[in-house]
Length: 219
Image (cartoon, one colour):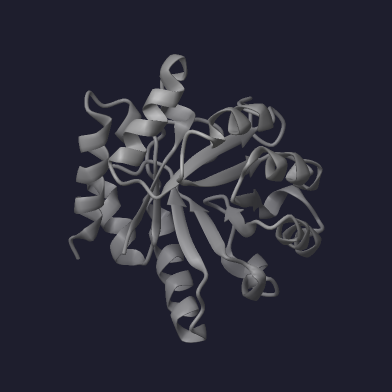
C-alpha cells in the first residue's frame, strides 16, 4: 500500500499546526521534514525546535530528511525533539555505517538518500542495515522543482533487488510528485511518496493528498 508523506517545506508556516492537522486528517501516514544547512544544499530551513513544537500535535511518523553536512552531529537533537526516522545523504559523510548505527541507537529507524545522479552502488554494503532508501527525483535544496524522469529506472532496479532479497526496506521518492508522476513512481516500485507543493500549495490540501494517493494506487 502506498504511504503519503506530505512535506512541510511547502506548508504555510503561519498556519503550520493547522496544516499538519489537515494532512493527518486526510490520511497521511508520514510527515516529511526537510532539514537544510545552507552548505550541502543552498537553502536553509528548520531545526529540532520546530520538530519539537509540532510533535505533541500529531501521531504521524516524523520523517526527518537531513540535507546537511556531517549528519552525525544532528542525530541526538532530532531524536530528543521527537523524530521517528532520520534519512541522511550518502554524499554527506564518509562514515555511513557509523551514522546508521547512531540513528538506531537513539531508537529511530534509518534511511539513506541518493541524489538523482548518485548510483545505487553505494548501498551495496549497507542495504541490510537500512529501513528505507530515499531516491531523489529532483536535486535537493528547493521545493517545487520539476520531476527528473531519468531516476525511474533506478527505482525499478532497487525495487527488483529488494524483492529478490525479500527485504523489508522501503523505497521513498521525493521531488516533483504530483497527480501525473505519482502513478509512474508507484508502478516503478516506490512505497512512500513525498509531496510538497502538490499538496500544500493547492486550494484544498486534503483533497490534493487523497487524489495523489488515488493516482498512485492505479496500477
